[in-house]
Image (tube, rainbow, N blue to C red; front, top):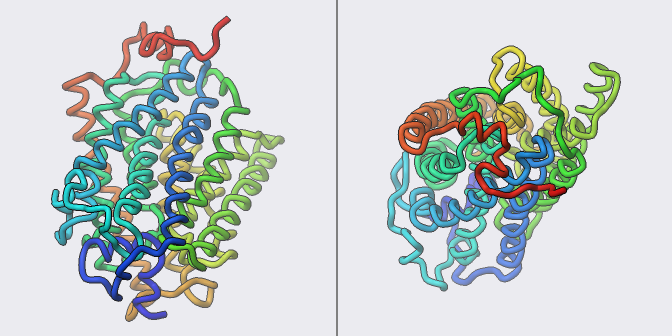
Length: 431
């Protein structure tokens, strides 16, 4: 496996083309087939947030907080789009610094309609990556549902995109120091899931638990809504992972197959674990397993074969299941909808396991020239430690800033009334 073919997979290729000298001459004009596929993939990734993630999370909360969760997702989608245009994209994908980009592409003022990178119009790449920048802070919503101020959600999400997401995106995909080390993160195990998961855990810790946690909480008000949201996430994840090939080719097809097999395996494994532990397999547990498998395969999807996807799904389901219990019952942190245990742990696990499952003998694509399995494993570990450490430290600083400005936690009266009415003046269900 040559260095060119290895780096040609996933967002890594486009990041290299955008951030510095390409490994191969970029096409003079965009490829129409690739462009059409990435336009479709962009819509699929946005579909994951609106309405997929909004429905998935809304079904898991109490009826008096349904609209507040949906409002968080919609508002973050709007806000993240503007932040991405006005700085996030440029800090992620311009400049040659090892830690963060520059503002050369602020507002896309320097990017014309004819700008082409890696076979795509750069505006299309911008939009595809914008959809990632939308869903990543939206994932954190699941950690603080039912008790946070709406203004705090907006301020934290905007700052988080600039301070946490953009630098890590630059490290991994935009020509930064982890990309230089050939870290393998096909579609966001580090950039999306590790950052969101670690930040979610710490926000939940500093925010404090819901009233009655952990024994006296109401069950999910609408598991059927959660199932519909999970189905939308599964479909949208095709765009998330297969779209990260940034081309309509065999890499995209391989990523899609590995993604699907991981999700299918993880859902079944979670159901079996619940059957053994509790004597029944819940529908919420089944779809939670599916999402755990999707998160776990994300960093590896374009680097492993179909059987690698099966192994990642099985491992992700088992590890994430017990991570849920660890966070809730040992750490006693009310990460309400298990963002860290499912997304964070799954993304980290997949980031570590890709070093093994990408080996040609395991059906994977191999490594960059001169890189061994042991060397790749060390790079993956360094990437996990660095990303988690930066996400944690920066998140604690941002929580401090938000608490001193807008305030963080809603009042007891607002929480008792429900955030739907107290924050938005609406109810999901009217008599």
